[in-house]
Length: 371
Image (cartoon, rainbow, N blue to C red; front, top):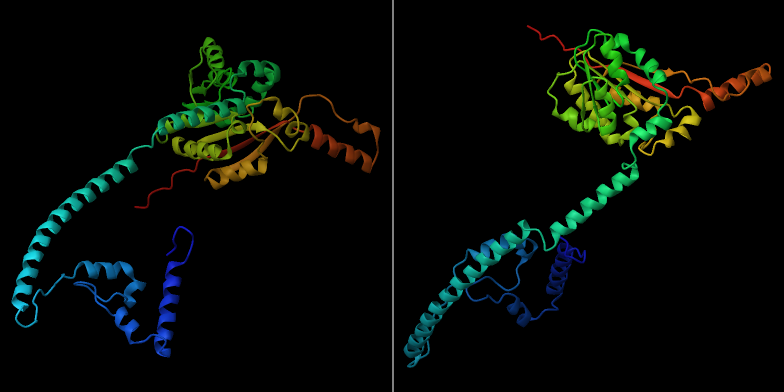
């Protein structure tokens, strides 16, 4: 047991008892000290006991003992009068002590109740401090991702041409064919949803940006406003049969991404496909430059890590595919021969390689129940 100063009380008591024992054995303590140590309290045990090493049990035993006092006097002649006087005084004291005890019991009950109320009741100003902290935290989250900057403006400048986004999405048509309820998380302008509709695939989208939602609805698409993780938590088990999320994972923290993957596995029917498209940090011009043109991006996700996350969360047939970069700035591979040309090709791959990748998986099929 430690006190507030960190002192080992049990060790100190043990040392005290050991020193006293040694001094007793050495005769340092005379008969007077020995008698004082064994002097009984009124109605109780000796003043010094070895049970101090376990004070709780000793206290329980002490409280259970009856307090007895013999008022009789054995002095000749005046003894009966002293005994009578003692009994009279003890009667008065007993009446007074009962009243004191009842008052103390009431005080103890009130004190206990007050302590319990204080424990359950917030301290003065707690609600205001909590509100201030919540406001500061919400402001920090908004400022961290520039939430007041409309994502529609970012998409117009940095989001890429819709034709290129559509070409990316077309690569996954076969995965979602004959599906009836595919969810597009962070559906944006609705490019993927339009593609699904054109091929007779049932799909709907969820996005947080009201302007994106308005644009998608003008195209006649089914979209709703909301947070991706919250929307998944509201869905029932196995209620959708496919999921597509383009440029969502890099906007959430790692723990939130894991939660999204777990919720996706819960709400997807067995054997349903999942596709997450995200910037490819293995291409240095992406990881060191273009990734950060969107202030809503929190951190890039290496393809190896994303693949691991799907595998460890129970998805099957996990694979990674990359998307070829549009024609742009590259080193001229014709300017060298032999080993130099191979080095230039490697630099082009590292510096100006595929800007996006997709991690693909399926929820596991149900295991047949043995009869």
